[in-house]
Length: 131
Image 1 (tube, rainbow, N blue to C red):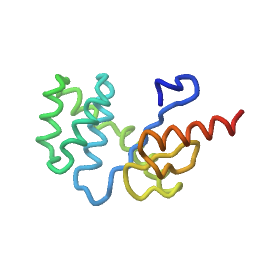
Image 2: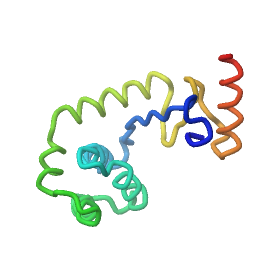
Image 3: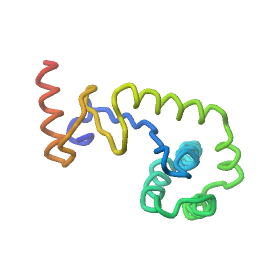
């Protein structure tokens, strides 16, 4: 959808680490820290592929696999600004009714049909509404 509607659609990704996952907050911090090295989405994708096995060692393994500067990553993960960002994102999510992930919204409306057709239908409807 970003390719098809490059001037109309913008992706905004928010963190919503699940409370019942022991390493979710740490994983979110790691992905945000990886962003400083230009590897947010790569790190994010590896985290999702390994969500069942996440622990401190797995986070370090992912960082090594992506050739990140581990010292910098570990330092950046401790940045209080990352914790504040995650807290803000979770608060925003709760305010709009997010209880699990993934949750997708288009112009503040929850997308129920999360396949490509569902995305496009909702985006086209919103674009028509705005014209």
